[in-house]
Image (cartoon, rainbow, N blue to C red; front, side, top):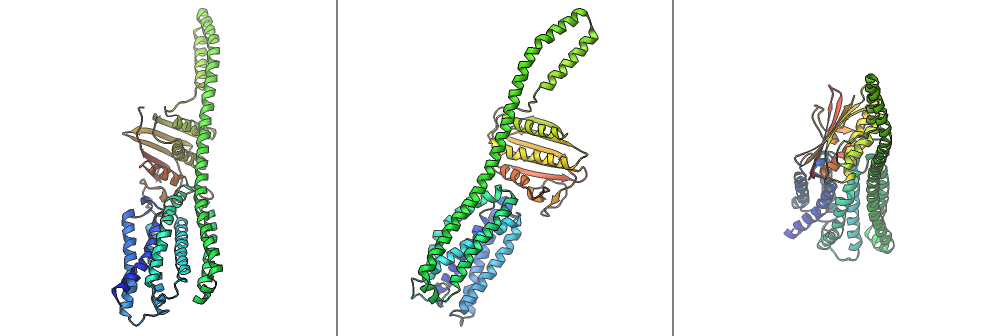
Length: 460
């Protein structure tokens, strides 16, 4: 056996294994892994290299196994061993929900099956290539060409459509759409198995009528996956924008009411001054003091609280403190921020989810109903902290419950049907090179959510 034989089989294995491993990692950012993204990528690359070297090494030892089907069986056995090893490392190294890991694997399986199908369909045009080798020169060349055609599109899909989908869409929607993806993918794989399980003569005879449906299925599924994930992200963002618009409407109505109250106060002021003048002339001090106290209370009751100069943050605080007041929840607010280089939608996702979670926790705990909210800009960073009473949380088991600040993945949702609030806060904070940390204090029975955003704040 020549050196070219070993190189062909090494490259053939590596193209199939390495590309799939890399695609599995693309939908996740650095914080999703137990180790750094670079370290995980290096381990996967090393695993692919070692796995690729197994087959030529085995053939060099078992020199008499040079013809099919024994060589193909040996190759498939090593391929299965390599995939299993990577699967174990893949599930262990990622700190995200299991369903996200599975949906990525299913899509990578679709990619690998599609590449394999393309190579076998095209190989029927080359009747004289050496089939005693798993990766003959022609077969290897077809794998290289198919990888060059399919990998860039697949990487783009994983990096953009699927990453946005996994990061922004609620887990309950992922569970619903996961069933659709599984069904569509395995229906396609069933078509592939029916075609590839036949002998070579069967594939050659039926190439012209089986190839168009399979190629059409590939195109339709690619379009289906892209549309499904993009549409889900669009719906999620539209929902957040609608919530932001509702808050702006609340703020507008609040300003309108304040202007109307000011107009009425101007109208009442003349009568108040006349009555005060009459009381002064009559010399009734007790009645004068009582009247002044009554008027002061009236003016205070008509005031609309302004928490800060930032219109979006101020509107959010007005909206949610009003919501909390309707449920007899005492909100203590300290806010100091002006114009910020951060979108209204992102502020709504972060601050809205933080206060909504706090209100939800207060409604569960009927004894203590209070929320402490602090918003400030310090040294170019926006700090948001929300503290509320909390009787218990559902830990995910990824971190020790020591009462320290931990990422969102340390907790599971307590809402019926699941929730995605903490993860949305964390993902949005990362857009601004910030962080979101959370802490449950079992002794004081309080839950603290703290977010830091790196921003360029305008003058306060």
